[in-house]
Image 1 (cartoon, rainbow, N blue to C red):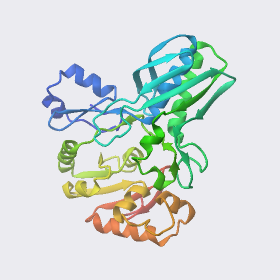
Image 2 (image 1 turned 180 degrees about the vertical axis):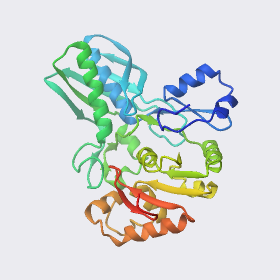
Image 3 (image 1 turned 90 degrees about the horizontal axis):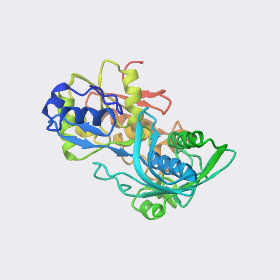
Length: 338
């Protein structure tokens, strides 16, 4: 069975070990909401801030025609995401779903949206959505911190509602009443986002994480002779394309633990902001740059980049280090040409 969110293969023996009824387990996996571990235990994914914002936006538009209690929206991985909401007279609220990610501080956060009919589809960011103050992030300086992929998801969700109601279009304002407060618990201000949280999500789903999951991923790594350890969703996508005969495993920020468990043909592949900072956590200290992406964009020949890459190669204990950008271009590679 294939996980439809991260595209990894789930061994049959993992499914056999689960105490959840097989039909229920497989349905949960196919929906993208459940992750099964090597001992058969099950963790729950949640929805990203992008998916939740899309739900609030769609519900607000639909509520122009009557009360709304449930919505379904598209996600970037092709699955549908569903949630109970409240919507009436062009105003809607969606509450971000609880999940099994121990450090997701946005669980339970309210996303509100107001809608009115208009020509075409327009999305505005209101209170609680951050503003980008520096270059180097996916959203442009001076613009709301809504990344391109979730913005596409929000627009597609609004388009569904517009078509369903037969409207000319819709103007939707999304806001988070507690966004500014919650943002104080994040690193947003340090990387150049102020006055609110960022609307993110490349798949539409939040991966679960706890120490138990870390142990289970270690099992999968130890069982693989050819493995790619990657840092996130974009890393998974390009690792699968670049190394089709390897097992691709999401290590996240726990690259060192994954490297220690790995053997055989090992590759570490991911975006520069994750792989290079793993190599040298202090590479931005006194550099004048807020992020690795900003450094890469404004000063691509900066010596700190090469130093961090060399340190990653050393920490990799023989693993091949491959750094890719968001378009899949290989920026750095310690092995042969791909």
